[in-house]
Image (cartoon, rainbow, N blue to C red; front, side):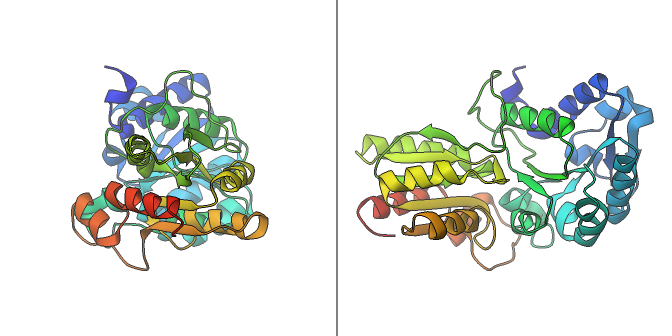
Length: 315
């Protein structure tokens, strides 16, 4: 089976096994959700001595990870994004970021992809709060190839990092040759009428929108940001200079994440109108992704409408 046919959580489990085979320092730490994150049964079966399940104790998971990192290990700590960011924010702040320990934190089922679990588990703010933390890097890969490349990068990186992990199958955007660079955004579609900025789960539909609008004569400059922090300001500014209008879209709140990063850069470097698409100041609910896209206005149809309006001089 091709890599892009697998659920991304299984790509995570397989890649983690590869990293553990390559280095005895890589450790898998879980908080009783290893089947959900895709590490069980593969990792405990192959590396039982480096698979640690702390139970339903996410704060302890982060502190165990920090202890391992302080002794030269490379711990990957995974849980639902709500538990891996909101619930353990203080432990991450003090034991990981403040201490500058290279703990690798993986938040699964981000945003609307947590649909059946409802508002308590539907985390719309992990990109924002993790981005606000000093010393922390924040990533959101969009397909299996990028996920694998990001994980390989994280295993070799000496700094704290947070990564969103989409659990399901995602369409292939990249291929086996892809190499991850957190300092670089990727232009997936070229156009001169409007800049569309996306990350993670929203990048595949954004590419579809760019291709659809090209057939209408609207040129979309699509920039995919696998890294929200650090943020490639140069590529965005250069694109905004050409198009004069920017639309951002993310599977997150519009407060503090990708859209905010874009606005911060542009207001300082090259002010242009920006339309942010995502979740407004709201909690989640039990619902399908399509319902939530429509309710909050950031699905493919809303992206297309925003880009059309921007290309015509609106915002």
